[in-house]
Structure formats: structure tokens, C-alpha cells
Image 1 (tube, rainbow, N blue to C red):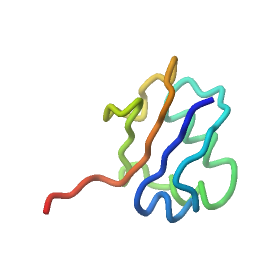
Image 2: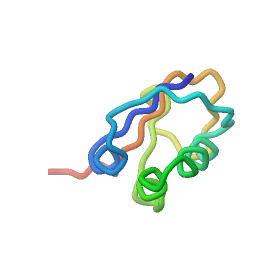
Image 3: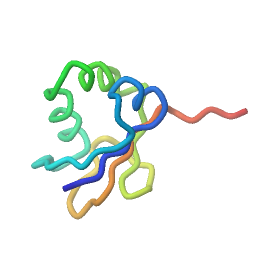
Length: 82
């Protein structure tokens, strides 16, 4: 099981701040494919990966990152300065 966290508009589209996901995904990209196939709300939230960032075990990474031994994946929009 992996804890999947959603932030900002990703959380709003999916309707959950976090969930535990049982997955066979090898990479973050594979996990996204699994999530998108669940329901339309996931498909919409992950429809444009260029508008998303991902962190694996609280480290910013790419969508090709391995999920081997990972406990947490977080999805969020790019951070802006201010």
C-alpha cells in the first residue's frame, strides 16, 4: 500500500486529500495510469501531467521515478513565488 496525497486543485478535482492505494505500478507514471482508469474525476485530474509535480517520500522527482519501497506519493501543481 502506498499513501497518495493530493494538494490544491488536484485535491479539489479528486475530492480527497489522501488515500491508501494498493498498486502493482513500477513507476509514478504507471501509478497515474492506474489512477486515471479508476473514474472520470481521476482522469480529469491527471489529464495534463505538465501541469503537475510529484514528490516521492517527500522528495521532488519525475514521473519516471521508481515506486520500489516507496511509502508516499504526493501530487500537486507547480509552486509559484509570491
